[in-house]
Every structure is written in C-alpha cells, then in structure tokens.
Image (cartoon, rainbow, N blue to C red; front, top):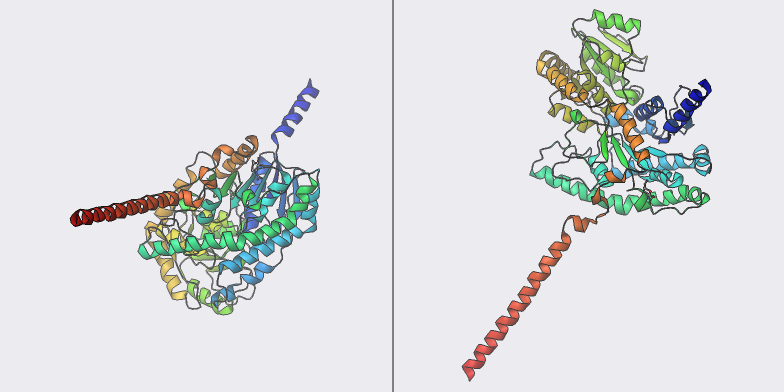
Length: 514
Ligand SMILES: *[C@@H]1O[C@H](CO)[C@@H](O)[C@H](O)[C@H]1NC(C)=O
C-alpha cells in the first residue's frame, strides 16, 4: 500500500513539474535579481529550471541547472557614474542596440550554451527570455520547438505593443527615451509620433537584418540537427505566447494592455521580509526621528563615485535630524558625520519595511521603486540613465516623490527636498495609497507568474490569448486601403464629371451652330 502511495506521489511529482529554460544573460546585477525571482518562484512550484545567467545562484537544488555565461564587463565600463556626469554617455539607440547584440552574440557563442542547444536529448516545455533590445533569443524556442514567453524588465510599451499586439498609440503612450509624461501637449504628441515612426523604421529595416544574421548563425545548425527547418525570423520573433512586464498599475500610467501581457511587478520580492541583522535593527529602533535610506542601486554603488560628488552628498546629509543609511561600496569616505552610516550592503527591503524609515533616496530603478511602493515609503529620485528618468517623473506625477538632478552642486536642493518630502505628509500618504493598490491583487505576483507559465505549457502556446492585430499589415490597420479606394472613386467621379461637362458643352455648341 505504502509502496503504491509513494509511487503515486512520485508520478504526480513528475507529471506536474515542467522543464523551463530561463534565458537571462544580460550582465547587469539588477537583471540577475529579476532572473533569480523567476528561478525561486518556479522551483517553489515544483518545476525544473535551467537558468542561463552571468550571476549564478549559490542555492543548490536537484531541479536547478545553471549555465554561467560571461559577464563580459562591457557594461560595467559603460555605465560609470563619472562618465554620466561628464555627459559622455548619450544613449544613442543604435549604440545601445549594438551593445545588446554583441552581448547576445557572446552568449550564443558560449561553449556551454552551444552544447545545450546542440544536445538533441535536451527538451523544454517552455522558454522564458528577457527582452533587452533584441529579439534574437526567440531562437531558443525554434530549437526546442516549444512555446516562449518574453520578459520585459522595463516598461517599454512601444516595444511590448509592437511584439505582442500592434504598435502602441503614440498620442498617450509614454516611452523611456522621449520621457514625456501623459497627457501630452501638441508638441509632445508630434514628438511621440515621430519617435514611433523612426523606431519602427530602424527596428524593421536596420536592426532586424543584423539580428536575423546572428539568428541564423547561432540557431540554424541546432534546429537542423533536430531534423527541422529554421523558422523565418520575422515569424518566430512575433510568436511569443505571452509577455510578462516587470511593472504594475500602481507604478505606471498604462492606457491599455494586450491580453497576452501580464504585469507581475513585485515578483522578485519574497513573501516574508527577512529580519534585519542585529546592528541595523538597533539603529532602526533607536532612530525615532526617522531614517533615510540612500542607495543608487546595485550597479552604481560600486561604480566608483568621484570625490566631488561624495563630498557634496556628505554635505547634504550631515547634521540632518535624521539617520541616513548610505549604501556605498567604497572605503575612501572620510570625516563621516555621526548621523550617517555607510555600509556596502544593506538589506533594502527590510529597512524600507521598518516603521521608522521615512524616505528612500534612490536612482529610480524600477526594482527600487517597486520596493518603495511595496512598503509605502515616499522617494526622492536622482535618475542617472535608461528608464530611470521616466520612472522618477512618473513617481513625481503620482505624488509620492520628488526629483533632484545629479550634479556636483546638488547638496542645497537635495536638503530642501528632503525636508519637503519628510515634513509634508502628502507624499507619505500617497505612497501608502499606491501601496494599497499594489497589494490589492487576486494573488501575489509570484503566484501569477507561475500560473501563466503553466497555462502556456498546458494550452501548448496559449493561442487564444494572441492578438489578431499581430499579423494584420499596417496599411490595413490604418485603413490605407480604404483611403486608396476612396481616392480612386473620387478620381473616377472627377473623370466622369469632366467627360459629361465636355460632352454637354460640345452638344450645346453643336445646337447653337445648327
Ligand atoms: C509558434 O508557436 C506555436 C505555439 O507554441 C508553435 O506551434 C508554432 O510552431 C510556432 N511557430 C513558429 C514559426 O515557430
């Protein structure tokens, strides 16, 4: 009896676990945090996970297989705070695209990845891959002949809509490059339209051919080895079953969503907030005046800040009536005032969740803002690059934060804003309101993530969620054919009219003559 039971349990265990391939090779620490959020939620649900990452997890599990790919160091060198301050990093779309394609090439050429692709005994039920400016990774689903899911780490609605539905409406859709916040005025609407047109043009005619070449180069053999033909690149990249967005309505203005886009912002946060280490717990409890958490994110805290900037920050924080917890990875800081505590590692969420934490000063990365809403703490955003400007401006618009420009002379403004956000209760009230919206979901985001992954596997690609607009040519969506038809009819009328007029005048003349 017991034997049967054990076998039944084992069988059951095998039948519920799916094999998931997670492709998260972008060598940037916060993306590693997101990848590990997928790993944790999927493992907890009993699935088997193969994880392609530059940041392998320490955790061991018989159901977790990790494939470490190079952290090429390209990005550390590129996103350096000093370069940013000196204006050396202009985010030109072609430059960013080339960087991303080069990362993808490195990853796909990696011996371990090629081994995985060419192992014909290896099968997966679903592939989940991060969308980082390139669609090359859709090739994994061609190799393993299984459905795939995009994961969008930012709110790039223009791109999400293009891939999952139809290009987003430029008149009200924000994007991380133009950084306009809706409602747009006339000039902004024109700017958005122009940007949308340029983006579609460069994607389709400049970027896509480059990607297609890499797609053939790295996936064709593996697909052939399995006795199939490589699908057309323009078909496979639009063939995702689903997309996850690392966002939530409480963080964003979202006009509308395709059915196959699920917002799972907050999934990287564990259900139980970890208790603070003893020393921090004591500091937090003692600081009844309030604690300010200051962190510029995982990448910038280690990027090396010029001393002009650190001095400016010490000037801003020194002799405030609050305790400042500064996450910083540099031991050059000297003459630190008593109210400032500098540590290279700070459990951000556990600090934010403490009732004495009154303000979070952040670079405005989406993960940090999600954590501030998760815990209902207002922010001051000092955006540095990429989506951070739009994130912070949205937070300002939503009323739970202020924005300060990064500069060597920011201490005065920063101090003023600190007093404003802490002493004016409207910011903290708004943060708590949004926190309520954020938490008030049917299920927590991690549970939702697992549900949709399973749904895609169970329904073999969730065809019922796909947008019918995906394969309709643009001229039909914009009714250009109707326009052409109407012009033709008008033209014919005009010809007919002229013919009749000429005929009539001819007849008239004829009558007069006779
Ligand atoms: C698109 O996805 C579906 C479902 O996963 C699959 O059956 C089909 O073969 C895919 N098409 C291409 C061109 O890969």
